[in-house]
Length: 163
Image 1 (cartoon, rainbow, N blue to C red):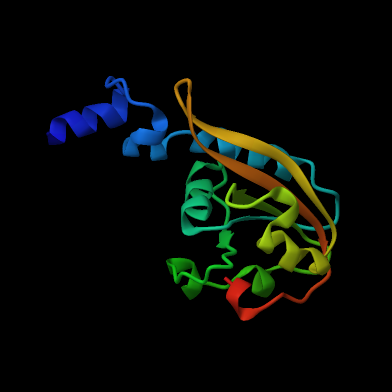
Image 2: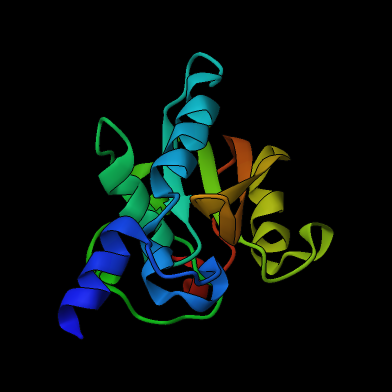
């Protein structure tokens, strides 16, 4: 059984849709990283661009798949403790004017996302750049939104978002 699971993770030979195949969760991250890298490349001059994810999964996968392996942050309104709690967060490392490229899941409507609502007052400009499909072959197993928050004004919404 273990050999079958490993083989499915590598080759996806069983006729399962990505939504029913737990091994599919590891696919599509390099594509997402390419989209995030594109968002970072369009940064205005003067400030630094940082990368964050809503959960540990997004932040850690991006840190791994982005070519320069940047410092990433977790910005989680749900407050689940992670390893990222032990390291300095965005608000400790960023400077006024910096940009944040933030990857969020599709758990809420884009115009009603609690993370964006909490962060928007602390940035000069907030925009949804694109929605990216995480695919394994032809099957989509998840969707992620890539947001660009420009011109950090300082401040931070609450201790719950502090990671």
